[in-house]
Image (cartoon, rainbow, N blue to C red; front, top):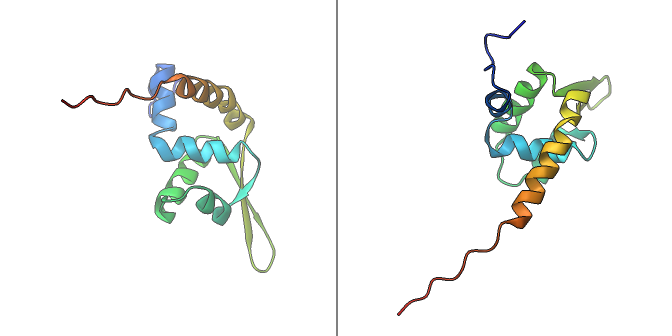
Length: 111
C-alpha cells in the first residue's frame, strides 16, 4: 500500500524525506551515535535551532530518528537513528566517496 504523501519513485521519495543539505549532515552526525540537541547544534555550525528542530521532527515522522526523553532534572533528550535511518550509512558513504573524487576546479587563466 502506498503513502499518498510520498512519491512512488525511490529517488524522489529519498529526496522528499532527506531534503536539503542540513538533513544529510544531521544524519551524518547521528551515524556516529546518539546526540543531544545541543550536541547536534554544536556539530553543525550555522544551523538554526528552528531548522534543526524541523528536520528532527520530520525524521521522527518518517521513522528515521527516535527521540528519547529521560525523566531527569535537568531534562535530557537524545536523538538516535532507527534501523531505517542506519540504512542511510551506505548512501552517505557513497556520497562521500563520490564527493572526494570530484577534482578541484582548474584556476582561471587571466591574460
